[in-house]
Length: 115
Length: 114
Image (cartoon, rainbow over all chains, first blue to last red; front, side, top):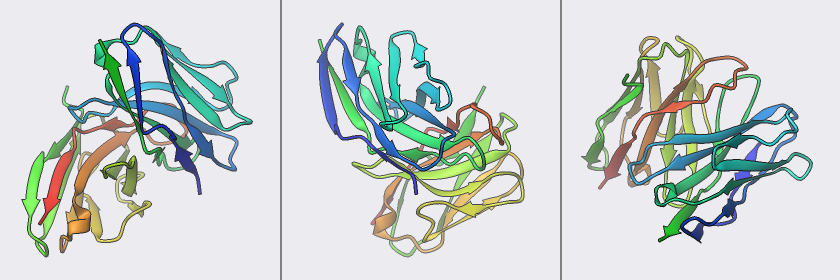
């Protein structure tokens, strides 16, 4: 079975600085997607960024980028120029490309932004 | 543009009571999902429906039943609520098949079982 592990329960960063959230996963499959979701206090689940495993190029969305290391099964999220609105729980998630789109989530990392 | 709508948003039950959580989506998605979120843990899949007329167990199905009423609606039922089912429940929907389109989530239902 696939598993996703986020080893940092909490992280903090100064406003305008850069922070990296870690995620590792375990799978025997070769074709899959990886996601980072943001959950603010409102409880909404907001997609931040996604990565297709077959793409070597790391995904980027404005201030958010990933470092995808397929061989190491690592998928970290880098947030540049951190803003107060970035404060939230961040979840790493995995799913296979084929078949039912069942997401497997990590435990989450709570990110605090210090003004 | 409502997306995924869950009702109710909050509910308190007594042990042994039954309850149905409702979920509806207006994006014409084929697939729908129910997750639960507990403190210190990520979301875990309870049940899913890959298409209208089909349902399958996820990671934590015990104590729950689901009904895919039609393409829009997917309900989750607790027949005899237990304190261990105290959680935040999320419904989600997505396109079916090998697509990179993400799942869209509702705002969650906070359920407390006393």
